[in-house]
Length: 490
Ligand SMILES: Cc1cc2nc3c(=O)[nH]c(=O)nc-3n(C[C@H](O)[C@H](O)[C@H](O)COP(=O)(O)OP(=O)(O)OC[C@H]3O[C@@H](n4cnc5c(N)ncnc54)[C@H](O)[C@@H]3O)c2cc1C
Ligand SMILES: [Co+2]
Ligand SMILES: [K+]
Ligand SMILES: [Mg+2]
Image (cartoon, rainbow, N blue to C red):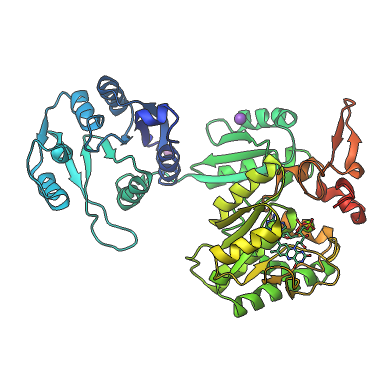
């Protein structure tokens, strides 16, 4: 039998979001969690701190959806109007709640009902208070959630909202429904597969929801398809249909979260013996040895956004995560800004910092001066893991562990990928689906600064509309041409 759908609406409240001063992450968080709980979010509304608007939106949402979740506007200041707005939506007065007064007393040391601190204790008359169970400690949460009819009033601070929601999520769990989701990644333009998708949509109408999401910045696929249904069987059936109907080879393997699966670095060693496998084995050995010699505090990764150190960073992360099974110190990365860096490179460095949660040791100027400065500012650092390869200029003599030259600030240079080829680097990055700087997809094969680096002429081609384009770096056939995009002076 068909159950009535379990739905939700989310109302995000706050002027700061509409002014662009704060990015709303709460609705994304809530949508993700609710989806996995079997609840269909039907609408997200973002409104300002406006009493009438809050009241109107809450009344409408409460009528339409099984659950309504509000975010924000329950603090102590004059512009926090959510309690009042919800009360107005249901034609109820605000009344001080004895339990909340007691809590405010404990937290703020006052029970003066006129104090702004007690504002949070005045809630709509029919409110219920619900404590959650912390999933980490197993104990009752300190502060209760206020619920009015089917409206759940969450605080707006993301970390608090997230913790509170997780502690209370059993309230929303829909046992009738469990969505089965499958993702397929397609390396074709959306236009060229639209026909097949349209036919699939018709054939599977109402049984599977088929979503198509183009991504113009991904190095591995162009369109992500989502197949979603309450029946696993139907999902698998549609998957089979798409595999059969889409152009051969257009569905590509893709790992959206290579950091979560960082142990795959070790799985590479299980492949059939090859120069690539030996290269990876050697790099792992060198980094493991470094982590025996130095603590995480004493090492940083030399990271300038290039492909080599992108590989290094991931190796270092994977190995550190394995060694310290609960990696709770931030890994350190050294970034010395070059003269006129590419914005694409800087953007990639930022996103890598966020992805790997790096502590960035950031310097400007000549490398030598920056290292002297690092000596003073971070005296604990003893070693730098680098993506240098023997084919780099002046690097043929280097070893896995080489101190800097005598006239340089003294650091241990750790060089795990000295013997890797250009192709090894790309096989590593691409087989793990690691994000890399977008310039490499536009024909750059070696990155310097903007005034000495161009796309590699070896990758140039004329497309079918007569426009000159560059193929991606990993397609470079002759690897001795790697530096063909760099001016000779460097
Ligand atoms: C920590 C460190 C120590 C060095 N010690 C010496 C030395 O003793 N003697 C000497 O002659 N030269 C030294 N250099 C300079 C180095 O040999 C190269 O000249 C320089 O890295 C540029 O080489 P490349 O063009 O091949 O760049 P890349 O191939 O981009 O550099 C190789 C690796 O160096 C690191 N790196 C490069 N640039 C940066 C940056 N801006 N910020 C952070 N990390 C970076 C990365 O790990 C990168 O993978 C050192 C550089 C660094 C970063
Ligand atoms: Co049914
Ligand atoms: K779409
Ligand atoms: Mg290099």
